[in-house]
Image 1 (cartoon, rainbow, N blue to C red):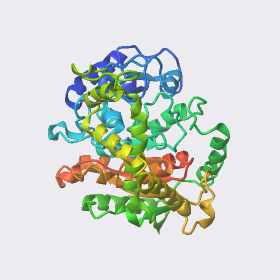
Image 2 (cartoon, rainbow, N blue to C red; image 1 turned 90 degrees about the horizontal axis):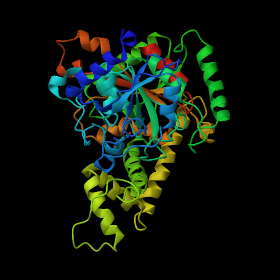
Image 3 (cartoon, protein in one colour; image 1 turned 60 degrees about the vertical axis):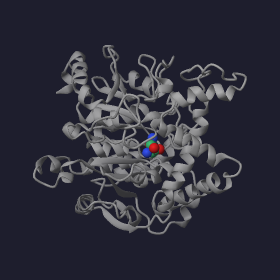
Image 4 (tube, rainbow, N blue to C red; image 1 turned 180 degrees about the horizontal axis):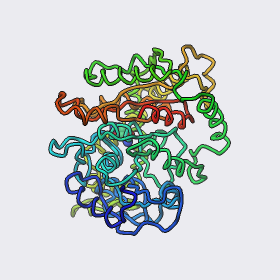
Length: 470
Ligand code: GLN
C-alpha cells in the first residue's frame, strides 16, 4: 500500500498529480523523520495558513508570498513528534476566506474526482481535501472558521473533522477570526482522522483559547459513558434532525442521500427525532458580520512595514501620512475578497454601525448556542442554559453538498456549529454508490457529504458515529 512506498515515490506522486489538481503550493524535499511514533509512515499535508519553518507560509496571498516563518505551529510540531512525514503545504482561499478555493494567488484547486470537468474542490481548505482525495497524502491539516474543512471534504468525497473549539492549538495558525478558527483534519477514513486528532488535540499553554486539561477530562467522562455503555455506538443514541437544515435550494439527490443516512441510523438501532434550531436562519449574516469584524482587526498588522510585502508608494506620495504608505501595500497585497471582508468588518466595528451590526451579531450568536444546548442531551460545559432543554438529542445530522449555489449561501449548513464552537464531521455518503452508479444523473456521480454535529467536547462520539456510518 501507500504507506509501504518510499518517500521518493510519494513525492513523485504529488508532483505528477499536482499539475492537474493544484492542491500543493510547496512540496517538501525533506526525507521523512526518523522518529518512531503513532503517526510513523503517515504522509500529512499542511494548509498554507499554518506556519512551518521548513516551507513557506503564504496564506495564498500576495501579502505573504515571501514569508518564511521562523517557527513551526504547535500542530505541526506535534505531527513531527509523532513521526508523521510532512509532505508539503496546501493551496487554500486567501487567508481562509472563501468556500470554493478560487481566491488564491496560486490559482484554483481542481476537484480530483474528475479533473476533466474542472470543478471546484470546495474551500477554503480545498488543497488539503483534494490532496487526500487524489491519494497524494494520507491525511491533511486544514482550518475551519465557518466550514472550510467540512465543505471541501464533502466536495472531494473525503472525511473532514472540525473539532470542538479550543481542542487543537492555534499557535502558529495565521488568524482569520480567532473566536471561530479551528484546526481541522482531513483523511479518507475516520480512523486516520482519529489517529491524527489524538496526536494533535493537546493542551497548549501558548494558545490562550486552548481548553485546559481538567476541562478535557470532564468532557471525556461524558463521552466514555456514551461510547462504552453499549455494544454499537449507534444503539439507542438519539439523533436530532433539524427541520431548518433543509433549505429549498437542496437538490433531490442530496435529500435522497440524507434519507438513506437516516434510514441507516435507524436500522442500526439509533433513535431519530425531529428537532428545531429556530435561530438557524440568522446564522449566516451573524457569521459574516463577526468573521469580517475579527478579520479586519487581525489583518490590520499587514501594513507592508511591520508585516507583509512592501510595495513602494508612487513618486509624489506624502510619506508623512503613514496610512497612504500602508494603503499602497495593502491594495497590492490583498485580493478582492479579502479587501471586501476588511471593508465590511471595519464598517461593522465603526462607532455608527457597532450597535446595529457587531453587537446584534453577538446576541444572535448566543441564540444559536442556546438552540444547540436546548437539544443536546449532554450539557454544554461552558453554559448554564441546559436546564431549558426540551427534546434532547445526542447528536444532530445535517447535509452539505457540492452545488452551484452562491458561495455564501452554501455556508448556511456549516456556520452554526462554528458559531457554537461544536465538533462537526463531514463524511461521504455515496462514495461506493457514486463509483458504481456511472449511469445515474451527473450530480449523483459527484461526492455528497453528511455532517454529524455534537455537543462541545464530544469529538470522540462524533467520530465513532461517523465510523459506524462508513
Ligand atoms: N466560507 C466561509 C468564509 O469565507 C468559511 C471559511 C472558513 O471556514 N475559513 O468565511
